[in-house]
Amino acid sequence: MEAWAQTVGTSLDAAVDALAGRTVAVLTGAGISTDSGIPDYRGEGAPKRTPMTIEQFLSSPRARKRYWAGSHLGYPLFDAARPNAGHRALAELEAAGIVNGVITQNVDGLHVRAGSRRVVPLHGSMDRVLCLSCGQVFARPDISARIEAANPWLAKPDAVTINPDGDAEVSDVDDFVVPDCTVCGGPLKPDVVFFGEFVPVDRFDEAKALIASADALLVAGSSLVVNTGIRLIEQARRRRLPIVVINRGVTKGDQRATVKIDGGTTENLTALAARLTR
Image 1 (cartoon, rainbow, N blue to C red):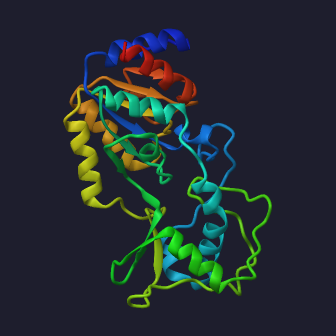
Image 2 (image 1 turned 90 degrees about the vertical axis):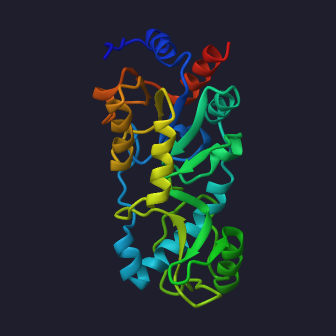
């Protein structure tokens, strides 16, 4: 693999050389949404946090109360986030026929709002809610309305600390009423992959298919700590595809990268799109 340069300008030139004339699959992480006001789990300066695991959610009624109360308070701010120039740059590259699709580890839906047509949400989406018993799907606004009706005492603070999954920090949840499925009475869960839960096989297969039909891989805003990301970048490496990684700080994919740009996704994706669509 080529040795990548240390300066942003030279690295951008190398990234253009690696991707020009190729069909590019894209993998994104939380770092692409930080400029939209959604914090990162692991980026430089991110506060330490231990998200709820699927085991906790399923085994503890109080944990479900805490999760749903926090998720209800945090979701309006999460939902109000808007795509930034980095999201729009990827949509522009797809429209130009350069990008064949976006695989994202984010649950914020910002790629779709930015205009990307083929998006594989590896970890699901916060705007859908599933019944764990019968599989019924609900729109998030409908569940929010039910929560408000059942918990009129739940005051909405003026300032909510939002987390990358749309959750907010809450403590007093003993009286919180958790909504259940109106079809079968089963427990409800946002359509997102919790920590300790596996990405659905069909969704991961769709992500692999995007990389299999591409000539290069662009990773933006992901530290690649989650195993699914590494598995996808390894698929590209085994096919000897050029791999470009854009992220602030070290990632687990740096040693596999053809080019590494240590910097923000917004400015670098915008510059990359401008160069590749000339």
